[in-house]
Length: 459
Image (spheres, rainbow, N blue to C red):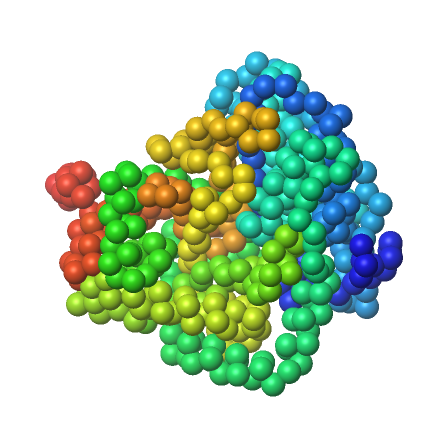
């Protein structure tokens, strides 16, 4: 492709990629920034054909065949001739729980960014007709949308062979890096800085009281707690959002803010919210790191209603997206001596917008309903991943009126029971947080928790 670098030519990274590089150097054994998309495949799968499809995808998306190194103390990437990154693991007739554990273990194997690149495809196979197909990337070369885009291209190439009818790549990730550098050298940078300085000034990072002291050097290791919602709750959430004139994400943000407010008592705080930086249509089919986690400010009082909080969250997110071209690493530099900007974040992945459109399990199970796509019988296989990036991260999946969530936590700071209680309080805020209810009045604990607390008090 025109504009692709010669093999071995060092190319600059985006600001976000540089941050990923330094985090990897800080904790090289961590998988906090290792991302995965996986599908259960039932029926015959030709491994030779899959290998050729993997090679075609890696040839199409240059970041997937890049290695990373420092040149003069500055991280760069180099396109490399790497082996086709496909491995097959025959695990035999293991049970579903063991299979899930094996998939998670395979997904958590760290990358050697300097020698082995940042992308791999793994087929965990029980037999010739039952397997889990995993696409695993380091965040330095991918984001959530890119993971699904690469899965789409892989299945496309598997189906059509040597000449898949992929949409053309209008631009390259190098174009994105170049555009970011030009923006940061332009007068627009000062306007973006003014906006974010106003957003952050006077607010503190929201946090949950920790079970252990914060270590001097984080291990970037974590764990996760699943949360599921009934379809009735999902339908009410979508309906309330429509009435308020906001996205369905805004009431979820408001629910998280309400719980954090009730935990800490202070109403002026920041949480993080990832936003896409695919600002032009030319980047639509390019795989890469197009993510920027933005600070979203909450200003709550006991009388603030969930509806008002959702409207304010929507306004903050719209304003943030309009100013998302300033990388969060640079936003943090606007408030010297107060880093990081946030310890808690929330994200929403709209599964109905993904391709292939694989439905989720209604009960929050790992495996979703089976569907047929390009001749293959597939089901979403959604295992927790990317744990330990923040103190807490609420990762929500949406498919129509079905919502599921995973609350990820930093195991340096929290015991699992603490996070399970927090996850229950978040679920309760979502279930009971009707638009006209003040955040100071929603029932933080349910009847069972009240009985447990009373039992502790009388012991």
